[in-house]
Structure formats: structure tokens, C-alpha cells
Length: 431
Image (cartoon, rainbow, N blue to C red; front, side):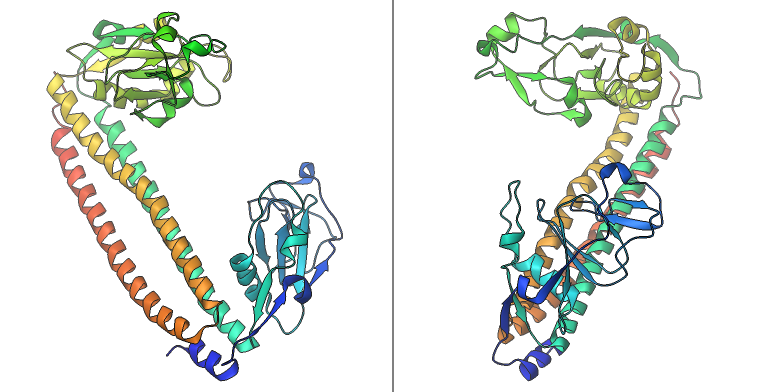
């Protein structure tokens, strides 16, 4: 039997009283409410508003809320935060609450997050939020629940940090091997890209003509999709009439596409098509001939991102590449067999990164759901359920730890194998 189980049986065996949030909290008025234009990147005092970011900025003011335990509620955003340090309120719309004794603020924070039903929509939500019913057990029970949930929250955050570190490490490793394999310090033939490929530009059917777009079946790619890397589907499709009445051209599977123009960092980004498709005029399709491997070209051009951006004329937003620049761009051309070996190594590393990239959000989401489930049961104050859940949570935690250890070991083994393969296959670089 857990300590929490014992406390509940001893101190509140017949259940607990429920009160509305507005009854057990008082509203605190901030001495200042800052505008977004006042937010600084650095400063002595943190600024907290109703946005998603826990701390929105900093400032060096002498008027602020003193160090205490606060519960913050975004009147428009419905975001709930717990703060136990001095701060200044940011933009309007933040409800600052302090609990009445003998109620723990951190306990109310957990309860508020658990029992409040979001309304969504842009309006004032406090009138509804303050009616949220909160169970009020004795102080010793509140303390134990906070301790349990704090420990669980910490374990979830540590897992997120470790998974992110693993992903960053794998991406750095992939980039290192990619750059190493594609340096070609030995002599290889240098050729113009246009001499070993066919270039095709795209086009856009008139958007005002619905006949060109409605019920379309031909995949049509825009420059905004180039960041996907591997293109298995497109966000939009055009009709046969749209295709025939525009300058767009069909590109075969495994065509390398490069963004000639686009907002932000799009220009110079490359992708590779895994389906037949057509594109808009801001993309150039590069169809390799029999001497050039598509995936080799894709990996190589990814290393040329900065060079391609510098090559294009104009500044970061107006500059653009064109087909002539792409046609004349110089690339190393090792033997086709060497190209294939390089692709094999880099694909292995990319797969490891992608597997982690897919698994990371899923793992975090699973842990978050497990946490919410556990939190909800802890706050129901049903003795038998809590005892059963404690046993269940212990088993789940043990299984999860074992599963995660197995995943990390498998990832390490795959990385070692890829490293060995890279060492073996990197040597024959000349043709």
C-alpha cells in the first residue's frame, strides 16, 4: 500500500469536499501590465503573459509581483501556469491567482489542469473557469499528490530531453558522414549538372479557373513543399484541363527538385520525388541521365544549400535561381557504383534520424497521456482505484524503461553498423 493510500484511508476515508476554484483563490493585481514592445530578450525580471511560452521575455523594472506561489490563467488562451518566483505581467488578459490557506497552490494547479474543460474560441473564459470544481483533501494528502506528480512530470521532461539529445546527435553524425563522403579529396570528374541531366521548369494553372483545380487527380507540387525532402504526395492536385492549359510539366519518379525562389529559407532547398508529379514555376526538376544516380544528386545538393543561395542574385527574399544557373552548376561525378555505395550509407543514417523523428513525438505523446491518466486517477479520491493504479503505474513504468533501453540499444547498434559501412565504402572515391 502506498503512502498516499494510507493518508487517504486515515485522513479522508469518506471522500473529500469539492469547492469552486473562485471560492478557494483570490485574484492578485499586477502593479504593471507591459506591452509586447516592452519585452526584452534579457533582463532581471521575467515577463509572463497568457501565451504558450512559459516566460515571454524579460525586463529591468523595480515594480513586480514578489516571490510567492501563483496560478496563472489566460483569459483568452485558457493556458494554465504555475509560478513560484517574482515576475511582471505581460499583455492584458492574464488572471493571477493565489490560494487561500490551507490549500497548496501547486496542488490547485494540478487540479485546475485536470478538471477544467476548455471552451476554446476567442472570448473571456474566466467566468466559466472560476466555477471549476476542485477536491480539497487534507494538507498532508495535497503534499503527497504534488510530490508524486512532480516526480512524474520530471521523469517525462527528462525523457523528452534525452530523446531530443539522441535525435540531435544522430543528425550531427549524419551531416558529418554526408560531408565526409561527398568531399572527394581524391580526383573525380567535375561536370556541369546540365551535361548529365535534363532540367524542367514548372507552371501554375490559373487559380481563378475552378475547372483546373476541382476534383484534380494530377499531383502538383509548390515550392512550399520542398522542405519535406522525400515527396510521396502533394498538398494539391490539378485536372487534365489545368495541366494542358499551363506551363507545368510531368516529372518522373526520383526527380530531384530544387526551389528557385520562395519565402524565408526555401530558395536552394532540394527534395526528391517518389511519385510522378508536376510543379509550379518556382521549382526546377532535375532528371538525371544514366551516369548520375538521383539519390546521390539529392544528397550532394543538400550539402550545397549555402552555395546555391549565394549563387542566386539579389537579397534573401527577392533573389532567385534560374535554370541557366542550375545547368552550369558544377558537381563531382564519381563512378556510378561509388555513387550507389554513398547513397546506401547516407540512406541508412537518414533512416535512423527519421525513425527517431517519428518515434520522438509518439513517445512524448504516449507519456503525456499516461501522465494525464495517472493525474486524473490521483485526484478522484477513490481508495481502491488509487491502490490499483499505483500498482499498474509501477508496472507500466518498468515496462517503459525496459522498452526505451531496448530502443536506444538498437539505435546504437544501427549507428555502429552504418559507421562501419561508411568506413568501408568511403575509400573508393575516384573513377
